[in-house]
Length: 423
Image (cartoon, rainbow, N blue to C red):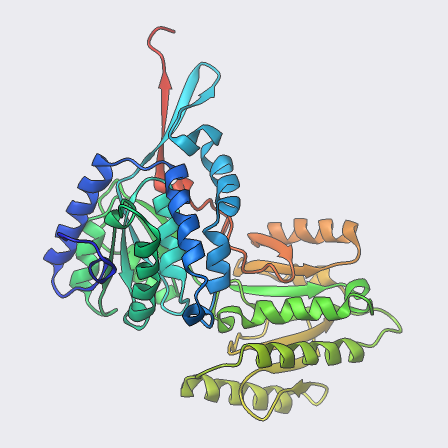
């Protein structure tokens, strides 16, 4: 790690010693060169500007990443989680005591391999707390991650921030490298499916290491009759829902897998479903899928067939190919997620009955509600049933804390409390 150009920051590693040496160097650099959140955000803003490049336009989530890196997004989060004085590394007064956020040291990141920008998003949370970042890069994200880090290198003068980042690309099955990485960190942010999360949590972390775990969950959308039947707002609601489905190819934990529509006497959902179909067609034209794994194509075909054969009252809307699918029926049970832009649309008599069946596996509830008082009741019930985020449709992927019920920056810092000996 003598130089830290993007080709050095993002490296394929083959031996545990490479990770151990990198972590030792990162820890030294972070300790010798404190960066305040304000200084980090200045770099992030320049980085966000550099990501407005034509070659990145088709990267899933790139628009969101640009928005996330802006000071206007991050400063309120830091103020809430760490206190306003922390922006410049100061102490916050609490009566006769004062508190200050200090970095943990080196924070390890195990991002999920199916979200292209997640290595960057995870890393930024630790960097804002003054930490160095040691990031495991899934092989499939190596080229894209290096491209994004090259943009950081060009945007930053002096490379202060880049010098506290090391991204190690290695195969999922290299347990020796995972173990070396775990031993070398003071904290970790862990993302992914059940098997991956359990594997990483079992690694030999130091006993003092702080772990933030974001495991596999699903998300749901719901609308009351006043919202979905409003002719003036119907098109907008459908566009918002289509965007939530399209982002990250419906693979994120925050992607809606089902839409519950609350029935209303005398109001048929036919017009709404036609509007939703047009929104899906428009989104597919604007953001067509470039490739699709054979296994996903097969899963979509099986889901379509099973849906139509399973109950004569059901129907489905989809093009000839596997681009998108609407599975239309009724009932409050959560269907098995298919992903691949496959949305189950289920009519229910009462949204409260559907939410009451949630079992803690629902992360985000995206709402379109015309009745504000009923929305408050629904939000209360959703919180009681384990939902961590309740947002407006179109904002289901907005990456802002709390996420999965916890802050994003505070878990990767130490809040030191000082009471003067003169008191």
